[in-house]
Amino acid sequence: MASTAENIIPVNDDVPAPDERPLQLSDPRWVPSITRRDYFVTHVGNPHVLVDSACRACTRIVRIHRDYMYPRESNVPAFSPQFPGYPLSVFMTETEFLDLVHEINDQLDQAFYPLSMGNVLDGCIGVLTCWLWECVVTSYHIRKTSELESFIERLNEEVYKARGIKVISPRRTGYLSLDIQVPYPFTRPKREQNT
Image 1 (tube, rainbow, N blue to C red):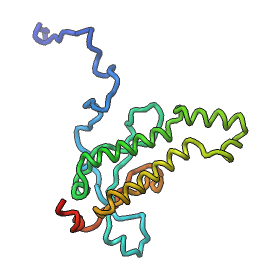
Image 2 (image 1 turned 180 degrees about the vertical axis):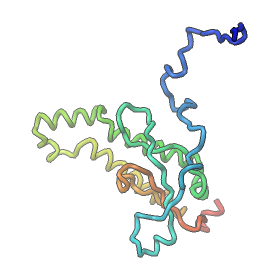
Image 3 (image 1 turned 60 degrees about the vertical axis):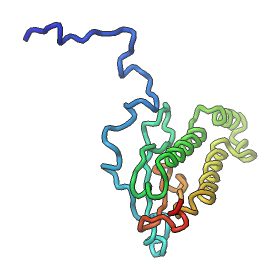
Image 4 (image 1 turned 30 degrees about the vertical axis):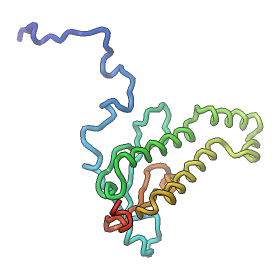
């Protein structure tokens, strides 16, 4: 088959090839063509309460899976910014969800990134003092994860308690998922339905 001039695509040397461009969060290559809610169960039974608890029957867990495509060289825990939709959409908007996930991801990045100034400084001082430094001063990693825990507790008390939902600390799931406890059946408390 002979090639014609119409089949030849001109090459522009000024524009890098699509695979050579650095990835940005707004880049469409980050967004899967099929949403996760098409393939994942968005709510499961509540494993964070006792089996015979009354709370187990009246709550469900919306599980936000870990995002292994987070834009870092290391394996820093981060959670997917994909909004799971129903039943979480009953209790929070997509913007609130994205703000929550981005804030948690930012705090996890500060705590777990091994080349951050705080972690490098703690490691160097730890080596020089034969790890006696950690007996005297709380490490940067522990301080940052404690800040994340207190942020989640404060958010649950000030914002989400009135809606009947609760963000479970990622530490309870080994940083593999972000769990959000929602009431079952999926209805907002009466004081929140009018807002």
